[in-house]
Length: 68
Image 1 (cartoon, rainbow, N blue to C red):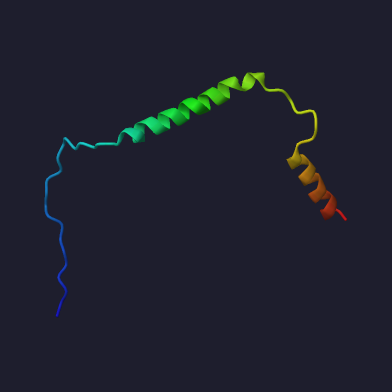
Image 2 (cartoon, rainbow, N blue to C red):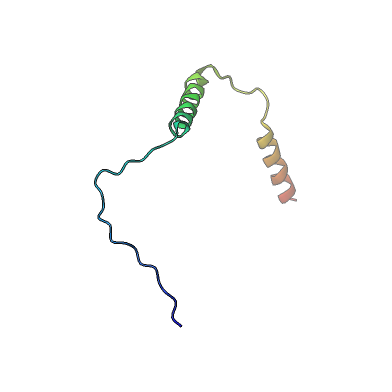
């Protein structure tokens, strides 16, 4: 017995497709963008670190271990 296959109904494509988004789908990206923009614009007051960063120390130890 052959299985039936479902075919798509031939509906014409409507020109006025309406997409409804929840309020947070617009608000959350806008808030995230504003927060990142504030972080970037406030970086002019940053000061250089006086000690070696932890990543630099870690890389130096890895290089020392590999060159033995």
